[in-house]
Amino acid sequence: MILIKADKNSEAGVMPDTELLMAMGNFNEELMKAGVLLAGEGLHPSAKGARVTFSGKDRSVTLGPFSDTKGLIAGFWIWKVASLDEAIEWVKRCPNPMIGESEIEIRPVFEMEDFGTEMTPELRAQEDRLREQTEAKKS
Image (cartoon, rainbow, N blue to C red; front, side, top):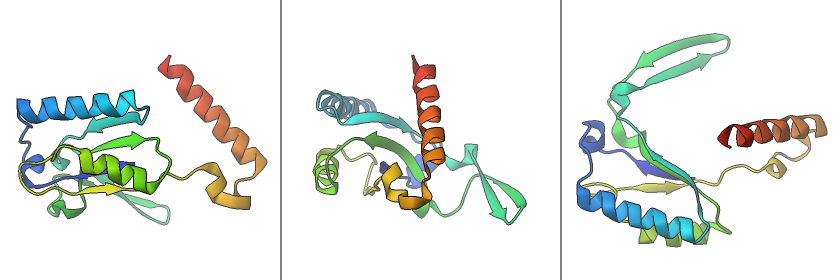
């Protein structure tokens, strides 16, 4: 998963200009043609979001905006690549997603095998059913 970090402009709702939208569109086309792109979206500013905090059985809700932009995400891609190195090479080719400095974080998504023996055959079957149902809804 490729996480595009938010900045003060994205949090203020500043939209990308036509040049950046075209550059990102072209980059997304490259990713698609290479068979890398599985999904990707931009996110609204945190002012339109909420956080739910868990403490045991209790839940509390905090409505945005959130003051610290450092940990906020402005958008994401889900890519299928062979290695972290391949993901890094693709990110290095990405247009700068923000007006000034930008940060993009790369995080591997867990596979069922990563959970070891905790992923019982019953849990694996449940996961497979959920994936099949999700795919069927896309069609």
